[in-house]
Length: 403
Image 1 (cartoon, rainbow, N blue to C red):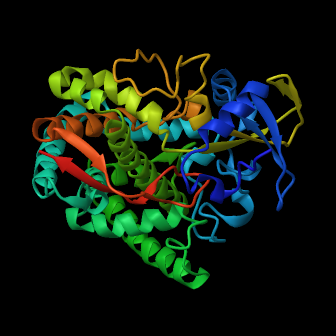
Image 2 (tube, rainbow, N blue to C red):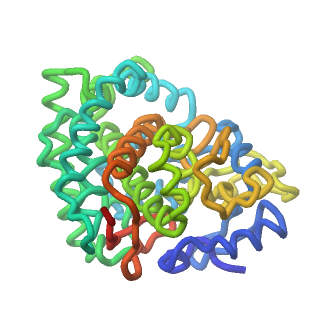
């Protein structure tokens, strides 16, 4: 059996064939760990939804190990042994998790997003105007990286030019297995110190002068009647940075590859941009930018015909669930007209991504702009992927956009 924890497994691309072979044997498999007790790998769509909807049975709480495949309560939120970073609400169970969501949701309400879309459209047009057509370019620094980070800077109420720092910090937070992102423990500690200095100053400023931005909402939240501490604000800020950045940019990157490999689908979008609202759901399903989320069983139970013991680590794999042929017939086919009721790329249940509408909006606006200018998409050479069992992402993606 392949080791789904091994980050090298994903460097050459998502192992969809291997995941399909495992699913054919059953939805739930035991995965041994060389550095731990092992975990239950949940691969089927329905069982992933079952785990995601039962927070009382399958906990993501920090004290039970957190939401990552490593034990967050032993090695910290980023796996770097940090102690000053508090607990983000992704690593909380209800009712605390639910209280945090209620503070964040107003910033991402449909009414607020209407105003944001116009700014995103201006940003997309400006960024895309600087992308040379008919030339080979690395699309990441020109377009797919700055777009969601500039949106995030606006949501946090920080200067737009900070997107470079936000990029560097978020790569370090999620890149524990990639030597380009974690060059040494000393370098990581320097990055953490730099970020925490920024976060502490932002916390003090938003406490003193709160506004409608997400940083203000997180800094002034009251959980169980108590003001949120600085450490938890820092943890939630990391969550906002990673969740608002990595998923959107890598969904765009994967979609560029999908359109390059399926030019008929790009022709369909160009002929009818009205397909995009549905197409982005298929694009995100196909991309599955987040590979796993971890839960811990709080009592003995059964899942997928396997007996799960209290305290067992249970890890759901979204790319596998999003290719489950019981839910998505011909699931390896990229089809922008595919009717999608639900996919798993934004999670499910209690912890479903609060920014999913914003991510889809950015993708829809980005590809609408491309459709006006680009006849064809070509991938040049082999993309450089992040070495990670958590983020299905890229470090370099060279493309040629044909006008």
